[in-house]
Length: 602
Image (cartoon, rainbow, N blue to C red; front, top):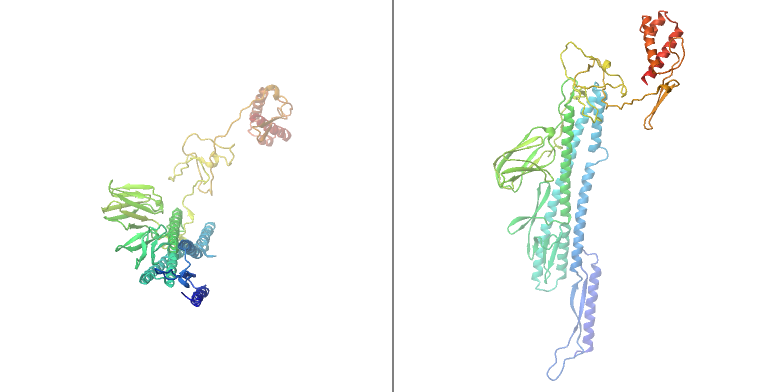
């Protein structure tokens, strides 16, 4: 039977050790990776009794059974998953800010320079004969091309930086995986005894790996960890017992491709779902897309301006040439191609080329090549060649089923852009076409002007055929095609308007109402009101009266004509001048004629 002193001694020793564990916890409160320890106490029981006696039921005291770590595998896994997600978003956001800061400086970004370039062209258009605006436009054209190049270089540098950072992260993962394999080896050598320091180191290493790439972890009874990529628990093994598998990263068609060495070969994996490595992968894809969009913008920008510039004439009267030139049209093969073949790209019309990527895939069953755009729409098919918008691709050799070609029309267009004009007089600011249609036109009227040799001209000048007015009242009708008039050579500008058929209105006035009528008011559907004066002051010179009926109007017209004929003149001015009638009678007669015309037309 143990004495009270022995029992008391065991208690003092056990609680002294428990206090030491508590002190250790307090001392390591800020130690990275340290897990809180707990001292588990257990009773020291007496030995089993003999045949004639029983064991001492009072016990022999207390002792420390084990010092264990406070560890919850579920909570640790959730924490690692959250950290992996945070690192992925944080890594992507940092690279996005870096790209934004480089592409959008305060006063010299692509949009600002483009605005300055177009303003310089406006100055040339305002004063096409001046040398100064043309010189400025040449300098702004060089700046425009250099800004495209510098912007493309910035995005390219960001891409290279992202890939370099991804390669560094892969190296860190391989180093940590090797360290975890060594920790597993030490845990196996511990023969099952608990080693809290090794377990803390194990968790620290796994936590660091999970910041770079999301993993799932399985722990055995000895504490060794099996680590797999991804969060499905079925991903490829990164670490198992004392073995670690190395990872690699490569660039592939605008994205990062990851592989893991397993079974004696590199196996591509898609289990990069979180961690900073996934953020870098997303950022790389974004920067590649941005660079592609920049190349497409440079392609469309230069081709559109080139086409417009070729329509004009420079100071020497020569047709305009290309404002911008560049290199593009990359044609590459798929990495998994098995056939032996070659392809040739032929540009038919650069203005018709659509600057989007095209995938061409061989179908062995039908023995044809099929071209698809970025969303999978079939653009065309062919056996030996495919005709696409503005270009043709010719094939030769022996392809295999599924072999692919990639046509990148605008690849590298921005970084190779150059302004081709060297002097201001090369700017084609004069229009080669003197006749053009308004952009607001919505009809199908066609005006054709042809240059002819000087011959006997039987046409009238255009001002004698068409009225100098945009009013529909004075419009002329034409019922057939053909020439109607000619425009004099010294004309500065002529504007011709095509109008639709105008509505017509016919009305009559009863004779009994005509006698006292002095004015006619017409209003259609509540619109504008038109008033016509149909009164008259004289019937013949020196007489007054009013209309009786329509026959009197006719008699007035006949009498007026006879009167003028009798005096051998065709105008009132000549009659008055010759003294045949007095000036007072001439004025009355002129008013009568005016009133008659207004009333008669109404």
